[in-house]
Image 1: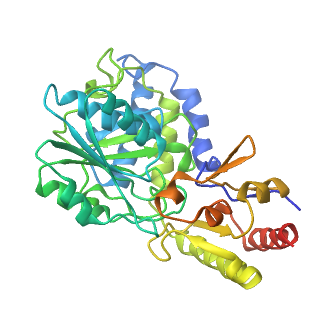
Image 2 (image 1 turned 180 degrees about the vertical axis):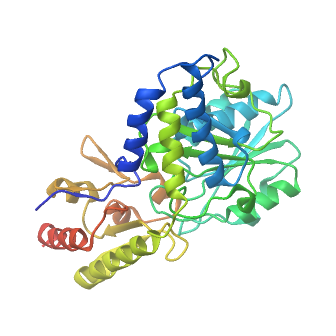
Length: 372
């Protein structure tokens, strides 16, 4: 069997058009963007062009885009930046039980420094109840952080509704959109958010670059102190190479015409699995409110990690972990109330722009052999 890549939610290959942009930046963008001479000016132009392309995708102004080293730094800047900008006032932060570790770990860090943290539950499909958010907001609530779409199941949260609730209470709202940018619409005005995180390598850009949208007037204490780069919000000389790469990736992502075909392939994949395995395969996540490329399924009576180990030609993911012979259920599936005997059989297949029906059929046939 030829190798098949179905792990696009973990990382995407570099788009050839992004690579072409980077090759040009290597030649022209070696100067320091902060230097006002002939070598620095082209680098500055590359950085600002990239910033403008990100802003165009999100529907914000370029001044509201802060470059970061990736989605994790963007999430940390949103949470810690808001916390430390609040000064000595009591701080309450609301998030969910199914967030990425780059949200949950900073929340635990801030809790050790006096913040009060509330983790909202989710239902069996991975959705939060906006009424739970409304009940959780208190007079000391500073920030709500809810991911736009879950990285494991693809479930899309009701961000517009939740952001409106936060706005009614004059509470900041952040969303981790690392998985959703480039797959579904992420216009910040429509979402109603104050802060939004992007990760380049989920978007056919290279690793090591991301961005945080910061609504004008939102106070954040920088994570990295130094000179006044990024309008004083993140010290460190910008990389014209990486900024232009993320910008180009965002410019390409504005065209979502490929999404319908990707969703069609995902549905064909699910239909074929059901046809081959019947009730021995279970869908994890919301059946409808789900990223168009994501299929998280459990093979009942099996261990997901063992299935993947038996077909090394297929690149996919399982949220469960195996340590010293013990299988640990994915925290996301556990929060959803998935039974352990079902959850340990979970595999996340995530499709991308390059996925073909031939690859899907090959994986289904291989699964049939492995599970026979």
